[in-house]
Length: 81
Image 1: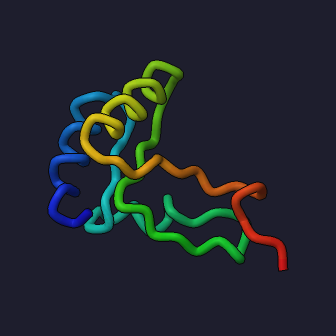
Image 2: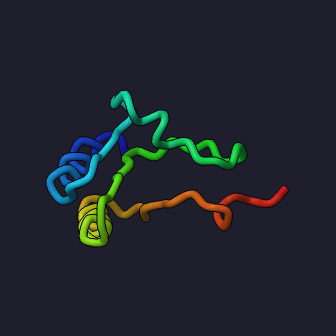
Image 3: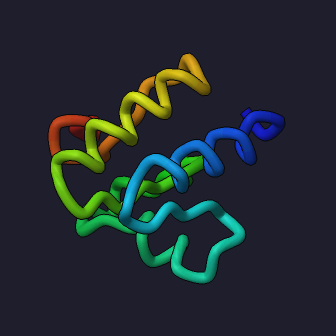
């Protein structure tokens, strides 16, 4: 994934109006954190969409550049212990 990261980030930045963050960005660490302490993930790219059109564009752009599905951490994706 690291070799395609610049391609993915560039494609997302041109497709959405919201911010697109990668690990090198200062706001990345704060954006990747969620309220649930059991979830500690480091996504390759974070798209901060501003509207529905951004969401659609981000998913389509991601699908064109990688085969990995986009992920949104939530209570349903956190394993129960």
